[in-house]
Image 1 (spheres, one colour):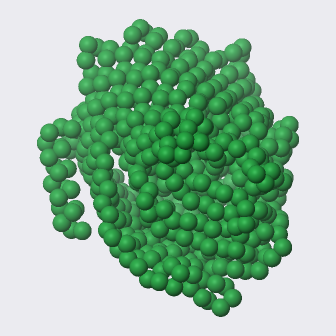
Image 2 (cartoon, rainbow, N blue to C red; image 1 turned 60 degrees about the vertical axis):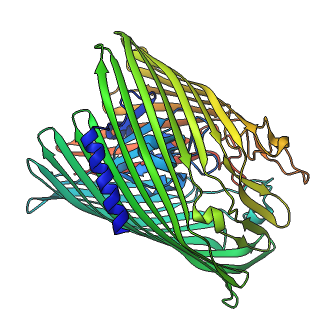
Image 3 (cartoon, rainbow, N blue to C red; image 1 turned 180 degrees about the horizontal axis):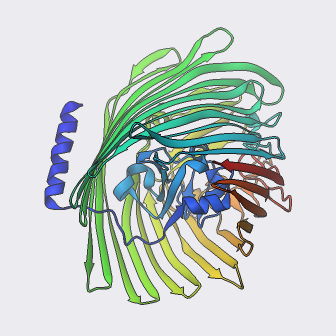
Length: 630
């Protein structure tokens, strides 16, 4: 391990000397959401906020952009995977900015960024003494309590935030689920308790700090004996040094995750506890980065150790166990160049190396050790912008991306009476190429952007789920696929203090090559052809904001076989749906203090629709929130 780090650091120094560097500034379709905007929108959670952004979806539980369901989620410089549930762990009041990068971003963020990236930066410690208290309730008897405080102690800035919440919204059973073993007998619950403490020191040339995050979660899946208990401990150190035009920064994080799994047999007849066991994951992540004028280069190193243990609840019999270690080294760099006064070019790239080692399996009474595997990829990106006229800017970019399978996808097996997960050790990594061309037009009181995008990838990995007794799930390589379309966004001030924000994404996906000729020409799962958001905002009354949000998604298949119904008559096609949300917020200032009141009605028209293989929307939800700042 030490030898690998030494070689990587030596290569990083070479990159710095050569001046290979900066991540693209000419990229098309980058969107920044500020803390002030989050404060105005007052979302209960970040997924509620992001679901209104153009081209962004979460229908299958995985974040997707423009028909590509592999999105990197980074929080304060470190990857959190691409699951929508990761957003639930972040309090909206802790966020400083959210950056949405549409299109391949593996040139900077590696394997998880096949279709783009969501970069979240949280608020850091401040010397000012502040205290904020937030309490929210909704009509499903969900609630959340949050406390955020900051100040200075002995020249060290400190910030702390805590949350205790219960959500009854996570899952509601659909009537015609094709997965009988996932049928729910009651509404599920999601409880969360935790907080984080940050401290930092600043002077003219140095900023250094530490952070500790602790989180407990209990997620009940709708049956008395079907739930997970999560515990996460995450300490982190960070520093930034400035020497004139040269800026060096480094981040080091250790993460300890434990999930206690409890599963019943399944179905609605036998609810006896069937299986239990822990899943553990420990990781060390290091990133160092240097910036000098238009040059930037960095090194990422991570080691991830994971373990899975499954036992029968009745007698403790061992069913399955897996231990794995993955070492990853990433080197990235780029350079930004202005020329001819109104042109800008960004050239960037990243080299990633994965070493799969120490993978041992216990399955069907046998112990085995898988051979070590080695995977690597280099992903470049070019982005060009041209300010053609004072009111018109043209942009284009070309990039590649990749996604290697993880050890769990390759080797994990789960056998329950009604549900079976099969491993696939022959999986190949996904590789993709992305192009986009866009234009931005601005005028007094408004602006508009139009982008054409195209992504083609080989060895596309997708989950194949077969209904029956038992249900069977396995990840497979489909072959070559593509996603292409248009994205339009318009922001226009109307009469008075009325503003309209509109985004529309047209996406077509298709499987173009496959060993299974029956699926060639089919669409990819959970990718609607049309996605529309229209937001009307009125701010004409001081300290009062009123907002209406219209959201529409067209029908979408739940499987790449594109079945409307299978042989058993179960539906595999989610119909189109439209929702209308209403929000009003009022701020009341008292001296240096303030009170913020929020009333939100999600799904105002009480439209019921299906969202996944076993989930339906619960309908109209009324939420109230009060926040007090001292």
